[in-house]
Amino acid sequence: MLAHRLAVESDHITADMVEATEFPQLAINYQVRGVPRTVINQTQFVDGMVPEPVILQMLLMALGRLEGEEASAED
Image (cartoon, rainbow, N blue to C red):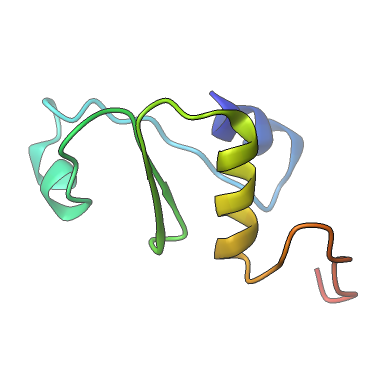
């Protein structure tokens, strides 16, 4: 749900929710073995229900930023 809320707030974020049993090829492509599985930029994966700060930390890692860093002017 956090991914969808972030997507509503930012034009730079998109979020899709997919039913793995209805789209088995996507489940295979993203190596889904349990749900939920959150995929961030095809590089970071978060499995299971985790606290929102964990998702945010993974998002920052995928962006190549450490927590608390200022955004660059190019963002």
